[in-house]
Amino acid sequence: MRHVKLSRAALKQGKSSFQRCGVPHTKAGATFEDSAFTAAEWARLAAEPMLEVSAVDGPVPGPEDELAAFTAAVRAAIATLGPEEFTRAGAPQLGAVRAALPEDVTGLTREAVDTIWAAMAAEGVTAPQAAEGTDD
Image 1 (cartoon, rainbow, N blue to C red):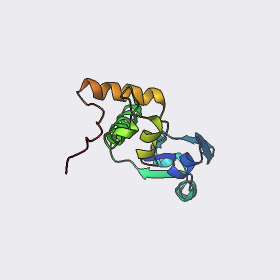
Image 2: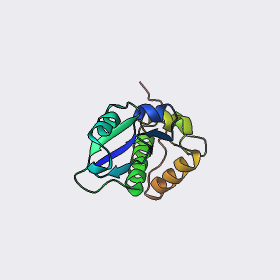
Image 3: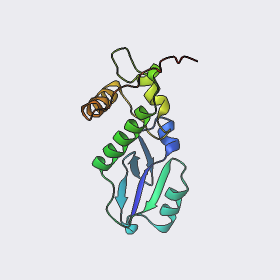
Image 4: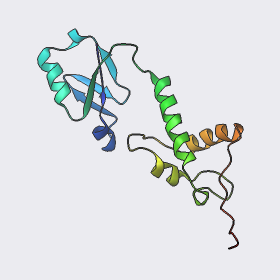
C-alpha cells in the first residue's frame, strides 16, 4: 500500500486538492493498494512535485494524528515567544505564533491559538514577563 497526499510545495501554493491519474489528492491524502494504479501511474505520481507518495507499513495517520501534530507544533511555537510577542491581556500574538511555526504547518487561526493557549494556561503556563533592569 502507498499513501498519496499534497506536498509542501502544493500547500505553499495554497492548493487544497490536486488531480493526477484521475484522482483528486488532498492534504490529508489517501491510502491506495498497489493495484490501484499501474506501474507507470505510480511512477507519474511519485515524480509529481505537487504530491508526496510514501509506502505504508502500518496504520495510516488519520485526522486525529494530524490535529495532535498541529497542536504540538503550535504549543512549541508559543513556548519560544518572548514577552513582547504577547498581548496586554497575556495572549500570544497570532503573527508571532505564525512566524515561529515550521513552514509546513498551515491553517493557523486566532481561534486555534486561543484554544491551545487556554489549554496551556490551564496547565499553569503563563506569558513570559519582561526582564527587570539590573543594578550594576
